[in-house]
Length: 293
Image (cartoon, rainbow, N blue to C red; front, side, top):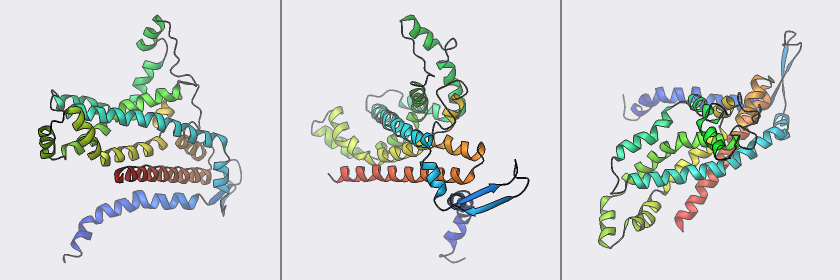
């Protein structure tokens, strides 16, 4: 085996799986977004025909007020929830990597543990803390005169945000900690010799140097926000404020498996992917611009 072919042979299993499970589904989704399937009969028993639909599926998706509302809802969710989560992750990472931190390994493990719980299970657990009559939190708030309906139409979005923040803060924290550990010790030693305290070190050394990790967590969070699915789907069984098109992913799922319209569902999936790409590119561009300044 020559040196030129050896890397390709070693990477062949990964490349085959990557193409089969990632590239091919994307191509199929894009192809189906331009097609229209017509079924004759109640269940298509009289025949099924496929025709080219052009941009009709995209027009249908973008003219659907529920789909547009779901995108706007997720943008608001992302602005608030992602900001809170990333700030919390940075603060926790800086505290655990400070010289005075005790048992950092214990707290790192504790903060990361929620990420190991599947989203469906985490949502079911939190739903018991949201349902009146079952939740000790609701009962305690009621004792002080605060009657908050965590599953109501005005609060359920932030109840979902709480679940997502609880789940992913520790994961993002570990990414930032990995970047902090890559900072050479000589930099800290020089700063201390110059009289810099913990706050000055964090502001002038750590925060600028962890910018790549923070950008990575922001991009992951943007993609995850647009892909939000399990949490609202589970909470929909106990919350009247969540409909079948509450998030963009739920809207695409509804069109695919309830309305049996694969073309519009594929168009919605492509729109979601483009939105994630554009928002991630904007975040990366703003970060690079800030880094150059």
